[in-house]
Length: 376
Image 1 (cartoon, rainbow, N blue to C red):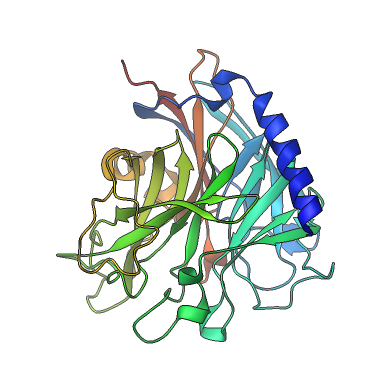
Image 2: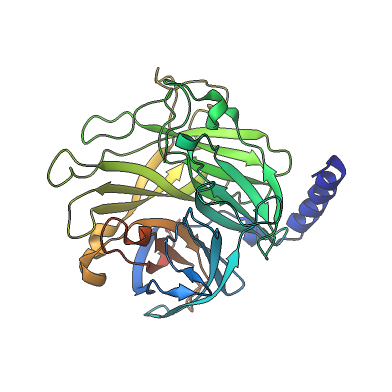
């Protein structure tokens, strides 16, 4: 994309943002979440693709968009139809599938990208989507813009600290631990990206005890690609050991959703192998960066000379496990605001990545909540 095109898009974007109502850009008041219901969509063939791997969800104009993290062609996102009221979740179905093309208008080759997040930009009508890359195959994480048909528009710049150019034994991102979270800023001028795991120079992946696992949440200017702000989010310990001990276990940031200029909802998902209930422990935190240090110029965080964001537990999915299919809290990785409910309160929907049942039976699980405003 040349400079003239970027300038024109910037002007159009500013004009469209200026036309938004104050309410659209105001901070979103979230005090608590009330469970409405759950739906599970079967893993079936949809227009020649296997439905599953749903790593994010977004909502606009009555439709829902969920990207699949399938690394095999075709790379794709699904359009869903969800219906729920204040009292019940009544419908969940697949409406369409859209194939995402590479810069040459072709299908991505197998194993060359790993989609993790998708957001619709209301100022342009286009999508931005994130791939965490394939670091063990020397493929960088990326954020790209596509149109509604899946056609490539441009690749957005990323900080060099998130790329392979800085990756050595002690520096750079970790395999399967790069960009998982993606949210447009409330003013629609930028986008926030959240790393799943700490950079090597910042800290270690979470442990069962005494973790020091700081991940970076970064605000990027969507027109110029420059880093505007960067804050530290400290991950919880891994919730439970594998069964039997010694197996795989992890905890990470899997999605974020902007509430205001400096506040977010963050999804944390802890996983351990060997459990009939799926092994997932998922929490939603309300995060405030008002008093946090801006670390965009900090090369490493291991010295601890920073103030992290504050995090307050908003919802623990253990509280509804008994109300979910088979008592399973699945691999929840996506979160978005949905339409307002009949009483005027906002709604939130989360979605689970079933990993195409690679690690045992899993669900394309979708859960709806009512947002209960915090009393002022």
